[in-house]
Length: 197
Image (cartoon, rainbow, N blue to C red; front, top):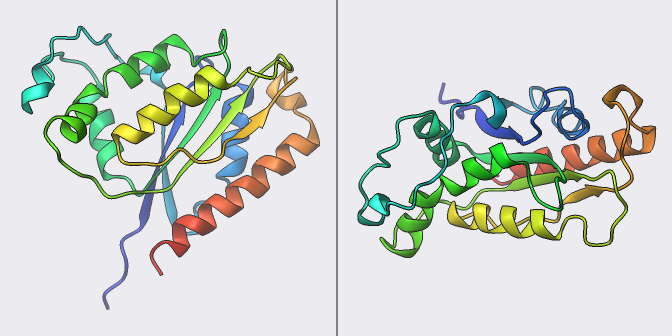
């Protein structure tokens, strides 16, 4: 019998805390992944050894990045998974510094796309963003960074699920936020499964 391979989804938890509101909301969103036939691979940049980009431009020729750390595994996953889900808090209207290092080290993808004219298949993505403030522009910096990060791996920026005024312990997240994350996740996982039909 020729069964389809299980879908693989990379969940990037950008908060420097494992027990964070953004990670909790992403876990709620992806709670139905196994039932939908999707394997979730979770990564926390804070737990990885990721050195900053040094702008050496080695990747512009297609050569491997010379920095020896955990990024080769991250890039392999970004290239091979069927979908990407991102959860981030707002830190001074941007993503946390450990996550920004990961994004900056995806310069080889940018070089492959815009210098070497290579392609990757388009895939779906989901973004959840959380801010303690209620600022109207609280997610502007985050959305630009994530948009161009995803663009480098041939993924269009999706409409994010945004939460303002969330400044509590994860166990105290409002029920309406949890319901919104669950509904968001159901739609995302359905779109991932439907993409193959």
